[in-house]
Structure formats: structure tokens, C-alpha cells
Image (cartoon, rainbow, N blue to C red; front, side):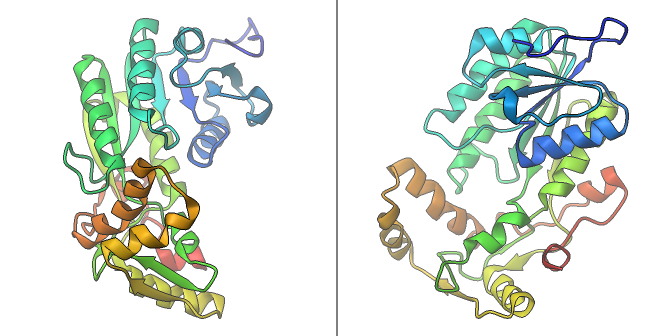
Length: 287
């Protein structure tokens, strides 16, 4: 449902941003507001929605058909950020896409994963693949943004003992900053027709191994950081202390095995082509 009334003197927004209380969605919403674009922010909790000029708030969640349809009525272009990790995330995605179609949405912009495939090594990328296929099957306009892993998560891979652990071997990844993904999304939403039926790969400017990331983190923080290349068996064992469900343990471990496979090492020019500047590197991020 729409949480706040519209000003009848202003045109109703035709752009909706999901995940507006999160990192990427919130940054997208802020950029659109600063550009004077009217928008509808779709959030699960209205109290957490950013207060932005030109933005109205609607409350809905993936998997909630009626509230999603209410939130999407009148929307032409939808930014659909991928849902939080959950065993039923794919079904949530599919339900929301159906609600979008039935509400009259014309163009869906979706954040996928650069390794998305039916048999992707990174297990969560399989959900992304299925979501992409469903969006395309609707016959609606689409823009697929296949993000690499986020640069912002790299420091969080370091354990309390200063060690990054995982079976990544010497594999490399061209991780991308969340801020760059948001900048791409904002550009696409500002001129969706220019990006109609396009699939982009969003990466950073270079690929690096986790051993190289550890060295850089050590230099910038002044604290010892190293990388330990676990075996797959060691990786599952070392994560048992958090008692993850099997699907989540698979996702955690396959994060590293997907890096080891070489699937994530390609550097794409798409970020710079869309936003007009070089994407942020890990060195830039760590400052």
C-alpha cells in the first residue's frame, strides 16, 4: 500500500525503487532525488525509508502479492534489487515479477550476478539465472545488470584472527563497488529506453586474488591480514560453528570456489561506458 499521500499538483511517479532502505537501493533513490526525478520507494518498513524530495513511500515485500500490486500500480519502470538470501528467494522473485506484470509495469531493471547460469558454481547465481529467464519470458522490456561480488564485502571476509579463509586458490575476481552499481542503475532509470533489452556486466577496473586483497588490506589497515586457501572440506568444517542451513553453507563455500574457477576474473567496460568514469578499485575503496 502507498504509505503517504500524493500531492495532486505533482505528477504521479512512474519509477519505482525497491530496497530503498538498503545500500544500493538507497543510493539509487538518493541519486534520482538529487536529479529531480519523482519516484516511489518500495520498502518493507516505512519507518526505514529515506526521506527524499520527490519520493513517495509504498510498503510491500517480495512474496506479498496484494501489497506488491498496490505498490506497483501506475509504475512504468521498476528497479528490482535482488532479494535477501533465503531458501525461498527465487519464489519470492517470481511472485514479485508476476505482481509487476499484472500491475502494468512496462520495464524491469534487475540486479543479477555476473556468473548467473543454470549450473553456476556460485549456488545463489542459479536463482539469478532463473529470475532473469522469468523476466525475459514476460515479454516486458528489461535491463539486466549482472554485478560481480561487491568490493565493499572484501574487508568483511577477514576473520577475527586476521585471516581470509576459503577455497579460492589463485583465482581472481573483478569485484565492483556498490556505489558504482547504484550509479549505473540511476543512469538506466533516467533513460530506460536507451538500455532496453540489454544485459550488462558490472565489474571493477581490475581483477585480484584474495591473497592480493589480504596484502592490500594489511598495508592500508596496518594490521596483519593473510589468506588461507582452504580445501572445500576444510571450508565446510570451519563454518559449522555458525550452524548454517545446508543451502547457506553451500552458498558461503561456493563464493570462494567460484573465484577459484576463474568465472569472475573478466573485467567489463560496461560501468565506465554507462557512468562515464573509471569504476572504483579496491585501492580506491580502502583509501
